[in-house]
Structures are given as C-alpha cells and as structure tokens.
Image 1 (tube, rainbow over the protein chains, first blue to last red):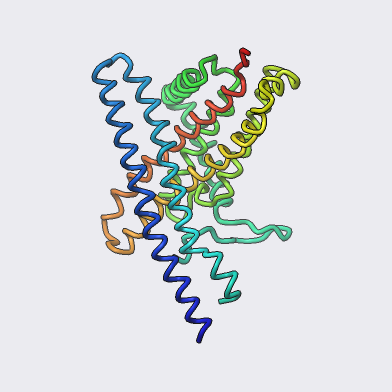
Image 2: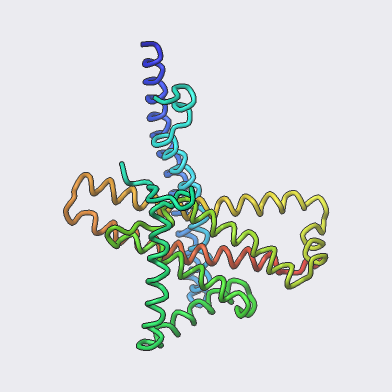
Length: 93
Length: 212
C-alpha cells in the first residue's frame, strides 16, 4: 500500500511539474519571439531593401529561440511517457 | 499512445530494425525515382531547386557554394522529404525516431572538421581553433552542445507537431486534423531549411581564418 501511495505521489508531482514547465517554457519564448518579430518588422518597414537579409536572419533567430521551448517539451515528454524515476523506484511497475 | 513511438519491425542478425528505418528506405526510393522522373520531364523544377539551394548556401557562408552544395543540398532534400513523408499512410517520418536526427547531426559534427581541415590543413585548422589557447575548451564544448541542440530541435519539432495532430485526432477525428497536418508539413519544410542554414553557418565558421 505504501509503495502504491508513493508511486501515485511521483506521478502526481510529475504531472504538476510538466504542466507548470510547459506553461513557463512556452510563454517566455513566445514573448521573446514576438519582440524579435516586432523589431524585424520595424527594420523592414524602415529599410525595405534590407528585407531579404532580415527575413533570413529572423527565421534563423526564431528557430534558435524556439528550441528552448522544444527542450521544455522534450523534458515534459520524457517525464510523462518515459519517467526515469518510476522505473528506478518501482522496477517492473 | 501505443504505436506512436517507433516500433521494432524485425531483427536482422540480432540488430533490431525499426519502422523508421524501413520508411527511410521507402523514402530513398521515392527521392531517387522522383529525381529520375523530374530530370526527364520537368528539368526546370530541378533547376529552380538547385538555384534556391545555391543562393541560400552561398549567401549564408559568404563564399562559393560549390564544394559544399552536394552535402548540404542532400541534407535539405532528405530532411524536407523525411518530415513530409509522414502524411503517407503506413509510412512514419524517419525524423520521428531520435536516432535519425542524431545521425544527421553527427555527420555535421564531423563534416565541420573535415571541411575545415581540407581548407586550412590539420595544423592550420587546430591553430585557428585554439588561437587564444583558453578558448579551446569553450570551442569544443560549443561543438558538442550545438550538435545536441541541432538534434533536439529537429526531433522536438517533428514529434511535437505529430503529437498535436494525434491529440486533435483523438478529440475530433474528422477534418479537424487536416489543418494541423498542413501546418506540420509547413514546419517540416521550414525545419529542413533552418537545419541546412545552421549547418552551413557551422561549416562556414570552421572555414574562416582567424585574423589574430
């Protein structure tokens, strides 16, 4: 019974932590990406002849910024689908 | 969620072969066949693709794309097709398995050294790499960490869009996932572009002579 209880506790904490992590981990890159797009658009309207360079740089920068959100997502996926703690404390469970 | 993650289809000499590997073979046949057909019937399309690749690579690296075009162009086409092929029924995208992005990133990791050493010689390359000697550990750490980040970016993007499609499919099976499938195709092609641009940036950085 006690083992069952702690297994439930680990699962519960995992779910809560995944929710909070995905929340914070997507809000922050979204805000930062929005600011990057804003600045790039300002630059494009001010200098339309530099629009192509700006667009390429913007896409690369967006990809780099978005990878932080992807890392959070992968951590959440590992926690939910392949939780190492559950395997470690309850082998075979 | 059963069947969402890569399954072992059969084993060959004790080595498990996953369904992503089988779909990679299918994909290679499709690419070769499409190239053979297109070169005969629509050569203009291939020329447009080639021009786009040459423009992108040369503008990112700031030099002639010639020696790097075969490698980076193959990378672009492979990743773009690999991300999009998941829409074909019974074929999973190879990039959904994390081993495919790891393999691609390791190829880039070694190709940076290969192209750098070929351009500057063994001694010249490592002298440039360690020109202030205390920067050498930083450089080596950054080589490893950017390989990891390339891997995780590609894998995470593919798996996240497919996961979203799967979740929406569980909620509304009819018509609603179509929009998200289209979105995942768009992100897949965009990821191929980004991956190539980043690889070209890394190779270009390894080629540049250190002025100090």
